[in-house]
Image (tube, rainbow, N blue to C red):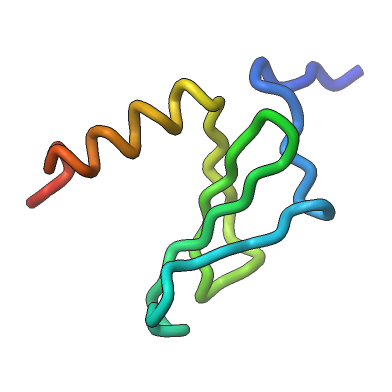
Length: 72
């Protein structure tokens, strides 16, 4: 028996992917909300792995991005 992921399973078949307006198709990030999980993927490669966040993790990630935590 395969153990389930601690966050639950992100159902890609039910995901409706969204990207920011004006994003280039060659370089974009897409996000989807399925049940209580949030998925993030490389929109230029729809079969790429999906990063999965809980709602609390997503809120912290977005707050960090807004605060410049990930600026290089």
